[in-house]
Length: 532
Image (cartoon, rainbow, N blue to C red; front, top):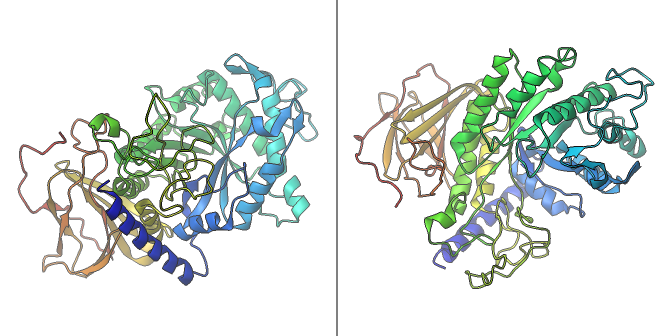
């Protein structure tokens, strides 16, 4: 209960900052480099307030699943009204859409597989498109892809009904979600390769300007699904004609910021092995909070906090994760998600605010608090927060990143680590003649960093302040980096002391040619402090 008062004060401060920002902004940033998962949803109307909160943060992309099982209610019968509304509202608010084709109907289930998936795409027994060709009626996945893309592409059925301009519609189609994670995909890698190939051929046939994305990979096991699928396509005679059936690849990462960059690099290296290059997106990233409702705010033991973070660490995660991902070459970064909604719990899960007293007889008494915002009082799930609808610190972190990184080219990224204690990630923004540094402390002890920034004053940003700082005569800036907090992450690299580092600072200076690596001002402390 000791955390309640500081959390309340921070929340009120954040609320004042967001209120002031919204009054001052007539137009939104809509960064092409940043997205948020589940800004809107198909189950109910999305309020303008919810859209406004996402736009105030600077998001340019929304990502959500288009569930096949929801629209094909009986074989050959499609109900699109919910998604019609969702697409219409997203586009009306100026958001680009990352739509995921996902979720087979039960009547097309064949054990763990999908009926008809391995059959030819077209009724003439081939996979080769040509104008006027009919879809194989025994391949339901092919029919669903055609129906979805014809409805929501620019110039498609919905666009014609509503009189949209030629460029309004969905242009990015992601094929399934986390196929390498069994809760989402139970069939084989061979089956997924066929799923992706079928979708690619049909989407490009219907809308040549559309982009088709390999379903976001979690890399939850030792299997590299991307490598396996590429190995399957290596023997496919149509692979070159159809761009190896992928225009982009997505990855997902939670809780451990370093892994966001590592996954982007891993995918890049996998593609290089096949002499390929594709845009890589981090289109899910985040960490759930334990020290705020609906999390387990009563947690005391380290094992209860594993894979969870404090609200402060959640904010730090986003800045650190995004910096790693962009430095390794990611094009777009998404945060999961705008509100807590129902997290990973069943729809309708709800309970009052409590400190553990409701955890009786195995009752579900906590949930996953991923949200940049806490749920509203009328939410379907977790509707009893004492400060409903208010931002967590991660919301301010998102907006800070959007303001500083959301527009313009990022070039010449450099990642430096110093004794695995301090991390410095540097970017150039040549359009503005700026050099940006993201710096933080990975250890549990204070660290002072000497950063070579040149001879001009720089601006240092944190979540709560902006400060003008002047380097010394040698162009070095002394920065005291606050220590990290224990997070008890169970899958750390051996050299790491924490998953989420301490409070990150973003330094904005002038672009210069001095690439002198930073040094620690104080001697190395040994032995290092570790979480108990």
